[in-house]
Amino acid sequence: MLFKKKEITSFETVYLRISAMRYMHEYEIIADGEKAKLLFYENAWADEERIPLKQILCSKDEILQLLNDCAVFRWDGFFGKHPRNVSDGEVFLFQTLVNEGEKIRAEGSENFPKHYSELKNGLRKLLDREEIK
Image: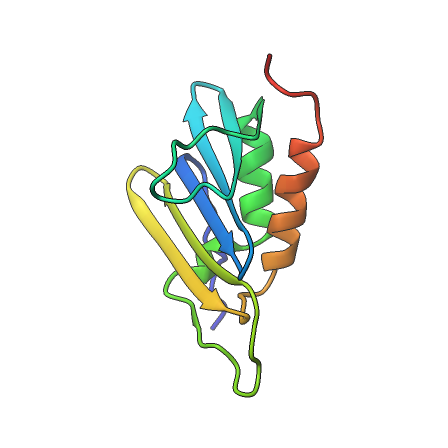
């Protein structure tokens, strides 16, 4: 039996936090009409004011395309346990609210879902555009 790939057709928020020993990066995407605001925070620790280091406005369709290309619907419930004999690494938390109320959550420590790198690279590529003034 073939299963149809579930597609993301809308989103409210998308959040990706990546942390390691000496840094923390946060990507936050907020839907705003037909547009989406992508914000990037660096080392935004809990006791500091969260001020975006960079932010851009892009189309919601670009974000939807990226989320679907990376098959993030399949990430829901992913828990990437830290590999044995690996003493350091990157920890991530991914959360999003899509399709009028469906939640997707994934997390891991130096263990990532399929297409994780493509999502990170896609967000960085979008952020390389001209910033909101």
